[in-house]
Every structure is written in C-alpha cells, then in structure tokens.
Length: 412
Image (tube, rainbow, N blue to C red; front, side, top):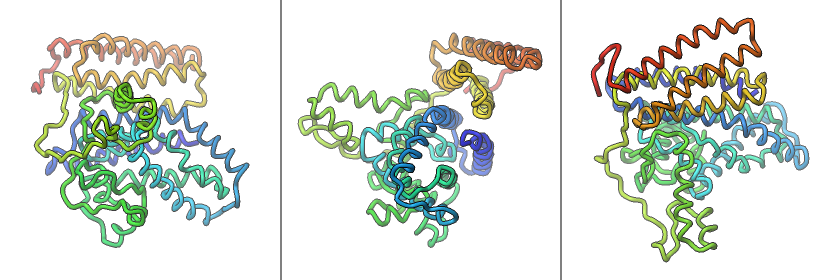
C-alpha cells in the first residue's frame, strides 16, 4: 500500500535533509532558512494527505483503462524497463504542460514558489497537481502494465528527483549529465532567469529535453522562485493563490477570453490588455520574503510543532485503514490546521493566539477520544502525557506571545 511505503520514506527524506543542512551550514548558511524550510515541508504534508484522497480514484481510472483498452500485456523485467522509461516520457509532457498551460501551472507553481533551493523544495508539492496531471500517464495502461509495476516505477522516479534539488552538488560526469537529470539541470528548471524559464522538464532523463528543444545548460547562477513572489508561508494560500489571481483577471475579460485564459500560457493577456507579458530580468539584490516569529523561542516552538506534525502524519498514514470515517476526517483536519497555524505564527498573525489554543485543545480531545473508544486499555497511558505536553505548549506559547520567557534567548 502506497501510504505505508510513504511512512518508510518520510524518515529517509528527513535524514537526507539534515545531512545536507549540516554539510552546508558552515560554508553556506544561506542555503537554509527555518521559515522557508518549514513551509516547504508543511506543504509536503498537505500533499501526502490530499494524495490519500485521490490515489484510489487515479488507480481506479488506470485499472479500468487497462482492463478495457490494453493492447498487449508486458510483464516481468521488460515491464519494469519499459515503464521506467515510458513513465518518465509521460512525466516530461505532464511537467512541460504544467508550465505552459494556466490550468496546470496553477497547481504546479506551488513547487516553484520557494526562493531557496535545497532538498526541502523537493517535498514542496501541490495538493492537486498529481490528480490533474494523471491523465498524461494513462497511456501506460494500453501496454497492460499492472498497478504494482506502475507504482514501483513511479516511486523510483520520485526518489530520483529528490536528490537533484540541491546546490551542494555542482556537476556530475559528462556522460551522466548528457542522459540523466542532475542538480545542475534542475537548478536551471527552478530559475526565474529569462534564459531558464520553461526549460529542463525531464524527471529522470534529460534526454527528452534535448530531443524536444527545451534543454538549457546552466550558464549563470539561477535566481529561484517565481516571477511574482508569493510572499506568504501559508500552505493553503500557496495552493490557491494562482487560481485566485486568474479569477481576478478573468473578471475583466470576455467569455471567450475567460476560457482561453484557463488554457493559455502563464502571463497571457488579450491584446486589448497588453498581450503576453514578458519575463522580467532578475534582480539578485531583491530582498527575499523573510517573515519570522517575534522571537527565537517562537521559531523553536514552530520547529517543535512541525516535529509533532510529522509524528502525527506518520501515525495517520500507518493507521489510516483502521480509522473510521469520522476520525479520518478529524485528524486530516487537525494536521492541515496545524500546518496553517505554523505559518501564522511565523507571520505574526493577530488571530493565531486564539487559533493555537483551539488547535491544542482539539488535538488532545481528538487523540484521547480515539483511545477511549478504540484502545481503552491504553487510554490513561495516552491521557496523562498528552495533557502534560499540551499544558507545557500552552505555557510556552503564551509566555512568548506576551514577550515573556522561561529562558531568555537572543531576540531576532
């Protein structure tokens, strides 16, 4: 089951992120910012949660197409070889159109919003893009490739793409750079430099970009992010902001142009509104969005809450099939709310002082009611530590939002 393999993958990814962080922090401390990295990972949490809702639908579509329209039945080692190559070919087109069509870019833009480039960016994935792009992978079903083979090859593709999100590796050997995607090639893909826009869409293989005219060598240092910065740590806003922008623009257009806008290239405008927008030149001196909590103590608080989000996510994925619909929805909501509140603490939102208390109370009540009704033997073993921990967090949070400290650290 895919969500169980994800439980295994989560600590592996986090360990690799820590390795990159400690390996680069002495010479390049600017590679990581806590607020940016936490946001990337929290968006990744939402991606995994939404994937639980859509994976069954996508696999059901795939199986139906395979059962009704498969032309051949490829099995064994040949199936894996063919699927690895064909999956990446389909990924190239899904990824390319994810940059060239507003409907798809509105989802995929989430992956590009970070103004940094490190391994946490690999996990910053849209909550809905996989579902929108799945249609590009359905042709694989015509070859009779079974779901297990498809899932394994998709996982290989995803794992490969994780390591290329780094500035710590300069170049690979020339033969490798010619065939495969690499950190250098993918840095280009994430750059907003006019030279780099909409280049290097391959997942594992860069050969597709060489064949279809979208390859670009890394020439100048990329500037990362998107042409109009998001300027928010809110994971929900990150996922809907582009669609909100499209909606606001469409209000001014004719019905025909409203429809065209949805499938046009990003930056398209009707001629009466100036036509296609040019890609602006980059300004390396431009300040990055860098909202922080009011103190180091609150930044540490956010980091600790993120650790508990990861523990909660892993437990949720592991026990997902045993949960009732009520608790599946309840814990889904708590995890999503937690990611949003982390961003609100970093951005110093006035409402967060009330929302955080409500979140902590909701988490304690939900967790202990689950144990009371389903794991009664362990109820008190959960009740006592969860209450103590929640009270500790309330005290920690309350003192810091009122500029008081149990331990006074250096203020930011």
